[in-house]
Amino acid sequence: MADPAAGRRIALIPGDGIGIEVADSARQVLGRLDERFGLGLDIDEYDWSCERYLAEGAMMPDDGLATLQEYDAVLLGAVGRPDVPDHVSLWGLLIPIRRAFQQFVNLRPVLSFEGVKSPLADAEQRPIDLVIVRENNEGEYSQIGGRFNRGLADETAVQEAVFTRRGITRIADYALELSAERRRRLTSATKSNGLVHSMPFWDEVVRERADQHPEVDLTEEHVDALAAKLVLKPESFDVIVASNLFGDILSDLAAGVTGSIGIAPSGNLDPTRQHPSMFEPVHGSAPDIAGKGIANPVGMLWSTVLMLEHLQADEAAALLMSAIKDTLRRPETRTADVGGTASTEQVTTAVLDRLA
Image 1 (cartoon, rainbow, N blue to C red):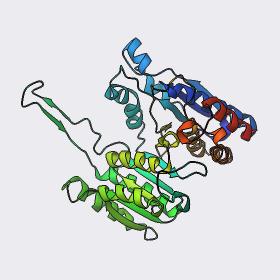
Image 2 (cartoon, helix red, strand yellow):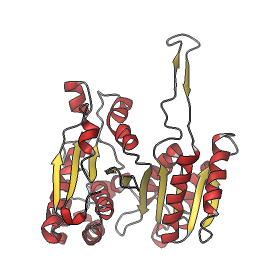
Image 3 (cartoon, one colour):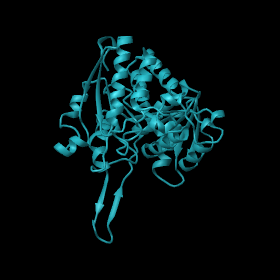
Image 4 (cartoon, one colour):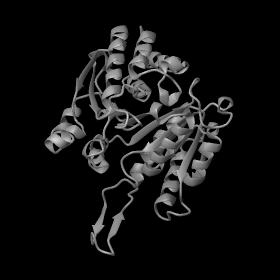
């Protein structure tokens, strides 16, 4: 990553659907923060998307990864549209970026906010503040496998999960270090009673790494029981570390428990900083509401907070997070998915006002 004193280069990829709308909110907010704090932001925008795929046959150009390597961070809106298969959009843009840049940490903080109603009973008396650390480069989302005898009665699909000592070690170390900075409680999501090779291996390596952090209290939970506990008692968790598939599912569940997936952020991190990290809201492109001006920009703006923290712009990140919390308190400055009446533009304006 470049020296902050020399400026910060950001590649902005709005993508598709509401990604374009929330990316515009992020650009405005970053402009205001740059004016106030002198962040030295240099933002370039790229039209890599499903629309580009339909026009040119690829989500991004052949030299797309080489282009992104020159940046300090990537900020992504969302990708996807009904006439492009999801595996095409995902494997044509997101996964190549995550893997080529060794973004092995998928960081998903989960918070309950004043003003955002949770579907849980008595949720206001049980504030949620947890982080899910998802392994982002291997596990269940591998390319190993295939389809055989297509169209026949014995058609077969094989999908292999890949777990390496290196992969488990580095995600466990990251989660343990994060736990040590927070409340010193780490939960490891497993399923060693059913997956007899991969999950016992996961458990063994996580325990080995936890031995190096005696200050952290490690517990193990089978993922199905953990999913139930995230609904029944989410306030009891601090940091959860999970494989690619388990982390993907648990993080969406946890976001729903707080009230809306529309406000959930994520960071795809290369902690070594040898490559740019990528930040994106958890929500998709939502083609059903695209163009209506009602998309919730908070997921994108909270992802921008994570990006600013990664770029060592902590004061700007803290101010933006404070502005987000303030707008969520009032129905007139939050969108309909979280019980408000505001448009995307009105929420953005409210955030900008608080950054002035």
